[in-house]
Image (cartoon, rainbow, N blue to C red; front, top):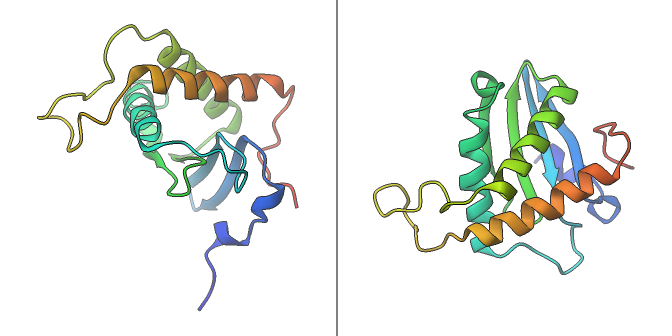
Length: 152
């Protein structure tokens, strides 16, 4: 059986950052790696769930809203996937940074934090989302340039 592309990346060499995981026609899959894999520092479920609600809402209300296919967490608890149609890496990065700052600045509940809107609405915390988004934004801002490719 053929291994999927993301399993062919040496995760021991992967640091937090933004990477193009794959391109399928006009759809680019971004690996938004917020934590170093296999380092023992993983997002808890509340954090992943809260960031997912916040970023998914902000990105679907951003300048690239019509290009968004999907945003969601990685099962390994070290980041998120973002799928964009007709992506421009620099625009995606700038939009991502804006959204992370929007989460940090948000002064209300997590979006979709009601029983009618979410299947596990008690598992959301805005402060967890803010901490993770601050951590990731600091990581992205610390790099003067991004080449979007995995180190090998």
